[in-house]
Image 1 (cartoon, protein in one colour):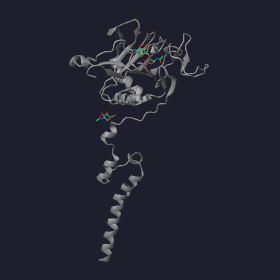
Image 2 (cartoon, protein in one colour):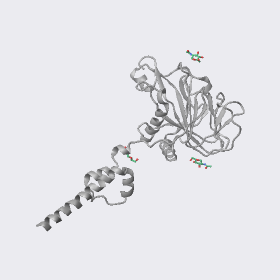
Image 3 (cartoon, rainbow, N blue to C red):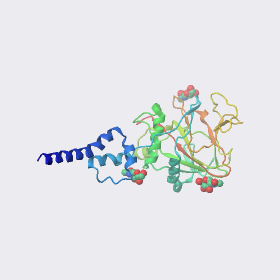
Image 4 (cartoon, protein in one colour):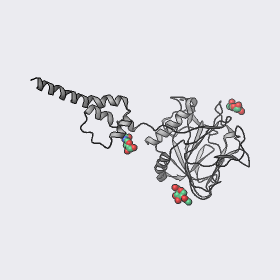
Length: 296
Ligand SMILES: *[C@@H]1O[C@H](CO)[C@@H](O)[C@H](O)[C@H]1NC(C)=O
Ligand SMILES: *[C@@H]1O[C@H](CO)[C@@H](O)[C@H](O)[C@H]1NC(C)=O
Ligand SMILES: *[C@@H]1O[C@H](CO)[C@@H](O)[C@H](O)[C@H]1NC(C)=O
């Protein structure tokens, strides 16, 4: 009898430690560490509560990767910030894959209307799908960078756009803000009267294999805070006709603010995509929108 009781005690102890041991352990090790060690094992012997702890939950699927970018102030007024590593190589590849089948000759905004095939802009472009998890991660990364520049509930990130330049393609000097604020297509349909303008721009290089020294993004009216002497491997240079020119470096972004505090466009943000010589340059534009006027 005593022997039988003793056996039961041992069995219960073994069973309990098999169950509670890993549970306790899981409080000390991160789920990721446990997953890393256990993913190759057959886990079916584990109790259900522990299994559910180890398996990726649907919400894990929908979280965005942490950003790894850094920031470099180039100019305070207008505000221009250079952002290395704004997107990863894998993100760039996926964004290119998403947009490549959708590329069409780029439209250009002139006097408030879009017209295709202008000589001022020779490139290909495509809006990125707004139902893509990756696109939404990049947009929320950008929204978080903007901090208080956008007003929650009033302003929007707008759609992201991919743009591709091939041999001899370019975009002559232009500004990204509209001289006359616009109404979105959806608002036009529903009769909502609010107006918007592009308060800032993220221009992100996704891919480039163009000839060195070509296809830079040039801001003739932006002066670096302190001038630099020529420096091997630098991503920007002072342009011979004034201002600053950025070479296309995959993953890196240029960010600048388009509107003055009173909402008018800042003429000093004028910039050009200089002609591409040999190869292909693919970038992504993000134009956050501030809304104002009636119904905003
Ligand atoms: C979860 O991620 C996978 C791979 O990234 C994707 O194919 C799948 O559609 C995602 N699931 C949901 C519910 O979004
Ligand atoms: C906005 O501010 C700029 C710079 O201070 C000024 O030149 C411009 O006239 C202002 N525009 C309006 C509509 O107030
Ligand atoms: C440059 O990249 C494009 C796009 O990935 C590719 O189609 C092309 O073959 C590349 N050209 C060279 C010279 O590597």
